[in-house]
Figure 1 (cartoon, rainbow, N blue to C red):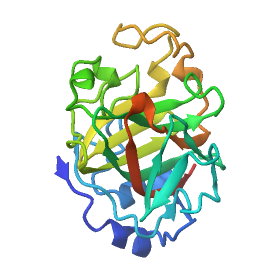
Figure 2 (figure 1 turned 90 degrees about the vertical axis):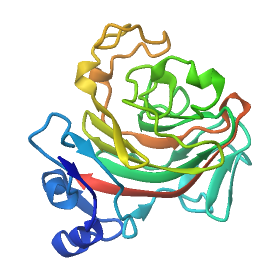
Figure 3 (figure 1 turned 180 degrees about the vertical axis):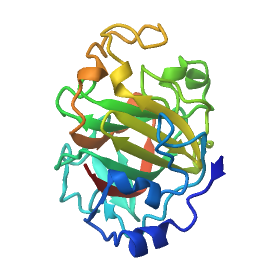
Length: 252
């Protein structure tokens, strides 16, 4: 069943009265998203297309970084675009539980970055978070890498169904929905990743039998579904830019 997100703004305001800073109940998601189907395992039906109208949603980060935690002088904002000069992450000060995050990103050549959710330790975040990969899949290095290391994947754990990232220098759009243990990623208009963290109950292997990187030795089935949101900085020496980062919090 192929459905778009058309009419989302009307649904948000007229049906649920959503304004910036307000929350939508998880039980109301089928009213908000036209392609949401509570009768399917992931909740997203067989095909999701498009992105929501986020004009009434809260900004994830203020342009002056007043609601962010970051190393001094690493992250800069110009014309609404956020970027980092070093491999150092940008963190929300608050924790998020159930939410939808919508953003745009642009890769530099060879970029390897990510969006980090459910982060419980910003000092040692790699084993204490879930990372949605944002990479330049046109570069030879990442095009030939393990699929769980490529754009749209849950890093080291679950490959995206296909690569939807655009060439370096072009803007991409990504919508990430986190509802308890369920994480869904829509990349440039198409659902590419859907995870139930409960299935990742091994310290060494993924549910399909593939081996995880050794530094991801904490089973996701036991990982909290509350934490900070982060953006990885200039990793592997390649830049990445973010803009239009908006978040909608969901009530339990």
